[in-house]
Length: 167
Image (cartoon, rainbow, N blue to C red; front, side, top):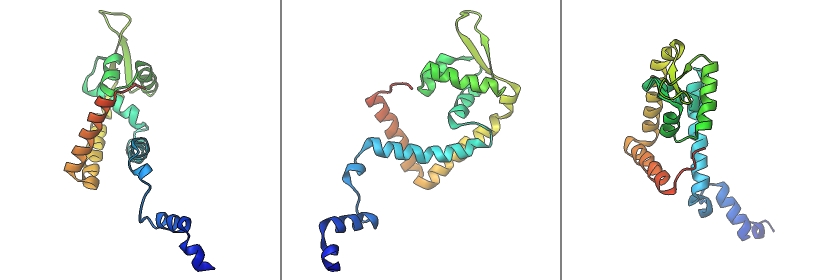
């Protein structure tokens, strides 16, 4: 009786999957599943790294951009990070509330605001850059430098060919 159950195709397939001997090609080839699984794994690492600053990875990258380009516009930030302007506005609102960034009206165009780091924001610059470098080096260690470069280049290439909807 037990032998019959063990030889049933459904049991063999289920047992093989549980042992990790094969995977469903449906998921192996699925861009949606694999890109989201990778994004969740990477996000966990980045969230932990930037949590010591009280920032999400997205907020940290907006701040890093402004630290590198003080006086930039929200539109420039949105374009650089491939985000919608409304999303960038919300991120900047949080960073302004945390006293890390400030907005000033542009003299040439009162509709545009220029974004600058505050003293408190400037004080985080070295730490944020060090964290970013440590994350990069950690990924190199996990994946290998060449594989990481290929992965990032491939993802950029895919984004360009698929197009982005700016969220």
